[in-house]
Image (cartoon, rainbow, N blue to C red; front, top):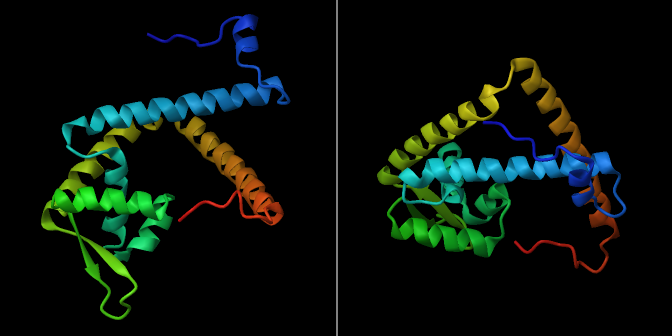
Length: 178
């Protein structure tokens, strides 16, 4: 059963954002709603495993580059170093990854999947594919192509806004901690 979230003019008024044109606010609302719903879908699909979806993304990154440094893994996942450290501690306790000192640079720790981690990564990959098929995969091909174009365009605008912010952020208050 499909329900429209906003059927009346008063519904649109409820989501008005001061200083933002109504259409941009509505696009942002729809985008945010999609992110929340996608996260809920993935969380529900991943309940068959004992790990959080963020840990699945970590295993996915390791499946691409087993032995990645802990710092590079944090960058690849777009999370802070303390966040990745906490996640890796839990994953190491679960026996799905192991951390080893780099053979050539004592300052680096490298992350490797164990056999259990590789098996879990394969299961996660199947769940991830199922979630994409159940959501985006249900859209007509032309709509998916248009969505890719629109999101790539939006991503470019956001990248430029981040760069502009970084250029004007002389005191470092907007920098993320990594």
